[in-house]
Length: 446
Ligand code: UDX
Ligand code: UDX
Image (tube, rainbow, N blue to C red):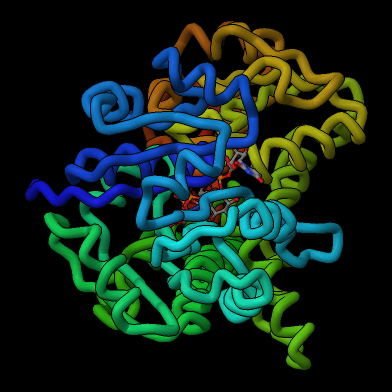
């Protein structure tokens, strides 16, 4: 990677902030990381990384000569030419994005001469940049530049996504600010979309909302497949070969979660509503997703009848594999429903913290422990450790060998041959009710 030596301030040492900081340092820049939480800065100074992201600890270690950590905004504004805002923008109860942390950063900027650029990396509603510019003017800081530079990092592969992005988006009021921000990515081979600030903000929200729409669409197709005998995996394959459709994000399951899709879809719908437009499509995307998390209950009742007194193993708690993040994970809704139905819930996850799951659920140290005595096991997160779930040992430990595959992770024929009853998402031809019995699509033996 080519060396360029700008000094960059990263404000907010969370998941996005730390990945961005480490990757910019890897590109050769000097990076100053600021956070308001003293323990977090102490940890980072001691070389301990407070978040889980594959490869991040190594990248921060490799570039530590070019990095420093601080609680003082002045340490950033005295030296850096770019102030990347990477603070949390969680949803408020109304679904609007909570920008209080963003404003706290803007208000914390000291009077300064340097013509630095404030760069928004956090996801914010379209129109926020305009308001930030007005706030800077009101504070006599209108000599500062402003740019919107949204991130498109997915958890579990964030460094790969930063280094090999599909595109880099930079929106600004002054073209020279866009060029300065774009130049920071020298060494990364990707198209840079230069545009106005509001469009850059909207590209981020619209991109996440569209990916979530694809997921809700394929989940609804899966639900229709269950009623018509089609196989959603075949359908997604056939659809995805159309280059206008493409194969990505057409994997049916039990709904999307995470720190981004749910909040960004809601924030965009709210933004539209606040602007006088009812975004019907997104209302449906959200509703379909919430229903999809609950459909598994219906499948369980089909196999087990009333769930009261039954034991159900939830396998996978995080919103997706390769992360310890449970924000908006389907496992939370599903677990709550099961407990409400009077079932006993046993849960397993290789990374999610013990204390981060539902009260009333038993967190188990192993898959085998979780399925012991269970009437059903549900694959909620497609962890690779679950690929071999349909084993003799697991069948022997379960009270009723039933697997509900919420991510279509397993090979139905292999599961059936191993003597399990099997159900999944949108593949009715591969489901069977009685352990080891032929699938329902096969005519009953004479
Ligand atoms: C954030 C945004 O929430 C999301 O909208 C955007 O898409 C990506 O960046 P994330 O990095 O996951 O997501 O947030 P989080 O892990 O909560 O980190 C935010 C950090 O900012 C925390 O370490 C917090 O202590 C810090 N922070 C918060 C500040 O440094 N200053 C503040 O005023 C508030
Ligand atoms: C997402 C975007 O991918 C990323 O570009 C953006 O910056 C932040 O939000 P992330 O939330 O880490 O990243 O997860 P992602 O891999 O996109 O998955 C989101 C959710 O959708 C997960 O719950 C996943 O299980 C689900 N999903 C994804 C499906 O159900 N089907 C699919 O085909 C793809």
